[in-house]
Image (cartoon, rainbow, N blue to C red; front, side):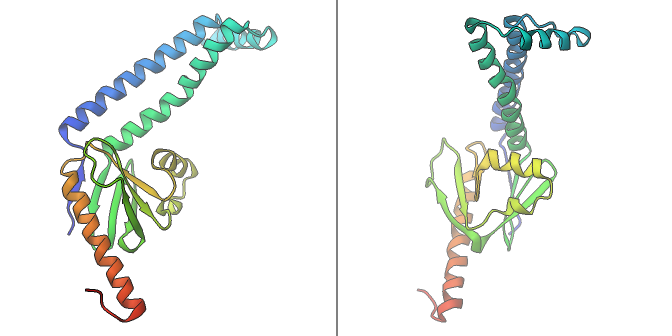
Length: 194
C-alpha cells in the first residue's frame, strides 16, 4: 500500500514561480521601508538610522506605508516557507495511515484518527484532512511545530491541488477511512457493518 504522491511538474513550476515572486516582493518591501523611513541598509549606519526613527517618529504619511511594508517583510518569509514545504511534501499511503513528509520531518495521520475530508473533491482548491488529534504535537522543535500549524491549521493536513494523481490519493484515503471506521464500529459493538 506504500504509494508516494508529490507535487506534479506543473505544480512545481507554479510553486517555483510563486517563490520567485515572493522573494521579489520581500526585496521590494525592504527597499520600500528603507526608502520611506530614510534608512540606509549598510550595516555600519543602519542601527544609527533606526535609532533616529525611534527618537523622531515618522509622520503619518510615512508611518502607514512603513507599517504595510513591515507586515510584508514579516509575512513573506512565512509564505516562502509554506511554498518550499509544499514543494518538498510527500504523501505516502501506508497500512497505519497517511504519512506526510517534508523538510526533514515525518508525520503519520493514522487511519482511525482521520475524521473527514473537506471540501469533497474540488479540483482547484486545497483539500483538508481533518483529524481527531494533531500528530504535529509529536514534533520536538517548537518552531517547526508552529510553522506546520500555521500552514495547515490544528488537527488538519492540507493536500494542495498541484499534487500528482490527487483524485486517486483522496479516493484511497476515503476507502481507508471507511475501513478503519467500520473496523472500529465492529470492535466496539461486536456487530459487523454491512
